[in-house]
Image (tube, rainbow, N blue to C red; front, top):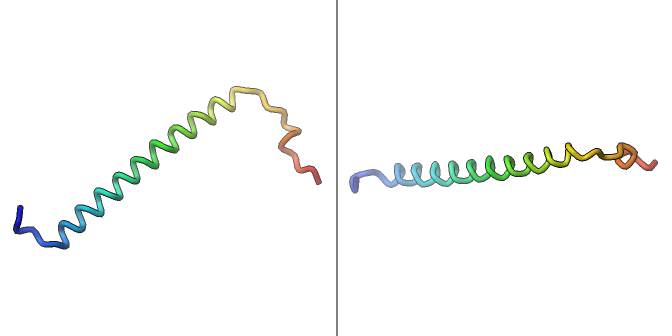
Length: 53
């Protein structure tokens, strides 16, 4: 594939970077939401979250 245009290589590279970042974001938020599900199981006093004013 040495005959490919430089713009095509740039598009491939940017799509690789975008897909890599997108997958990392999905994995990160999947872990964050899994941790928040564990917090939901614990009973939290609702008075702590009311405004003090």
